Figure 1 (cartoon, rainbow, N blue to C red):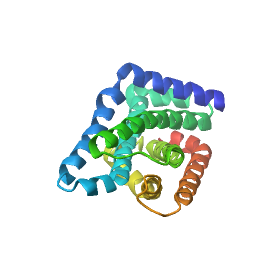
Figure 2 (cartoon, helix red, strand yellow; figure 1 turned 120 degrees about the vertical axis):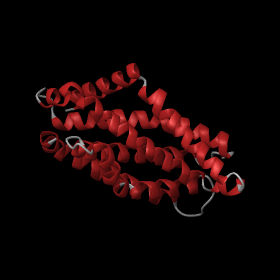
Figure 3 (cartoon, rainbow, N blue to C red; figure 1 turned 90 degrees about the horizontal axis):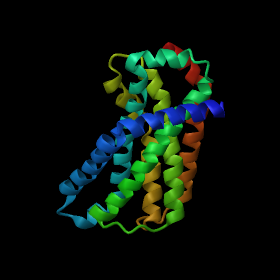
Figure 4 (cartoon, one colour; figure 1 turned 60 degrees about the vertical axis):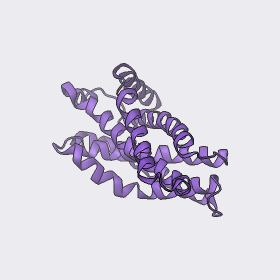
Length: 222
């Protein structure tokens, strides 16, 4: 399973490295989202700094939709999905590989967005351990959930519009939990940030487990 996961992750990452879709399209989209938020809230600079955690994770959520759609779009071209099903690879390994590739792409985008909120919103980064732990578990949860629902929508003609409708309500706990944890890390709240990290970790474990168990069946149906 782990060998197959490494093969699939390497394949997806090589495709992205050669096509540069993430670099030329997704990354600029993420920065544009931050800039637009800045324009909308510019009159109240202090509110912009307070809202930075929520705006950051909204931008990450939008980027995760694009990354998941891209991950399955490459399988739809030239019947590549059929080849994947007949490859003999472990379905759990395929799931883990695709989720890992999405997670790595999101991690790179999150690093870029972190620079963006510092530059555009004048956000002072504190609580590094809580920030990094939140980002790690939230990214895994988003990637696992997105990959699971991505294969569910892959065989449908309206997958481009259906995928956001499937994912956005489900990942609401990630958006809420990650935002609250970052508010604590940035000194904007006195709440216990680590309880939100625990919630995010539970979400990630649930969807990784569901993906490992159900991805094969969903892939065949797709």
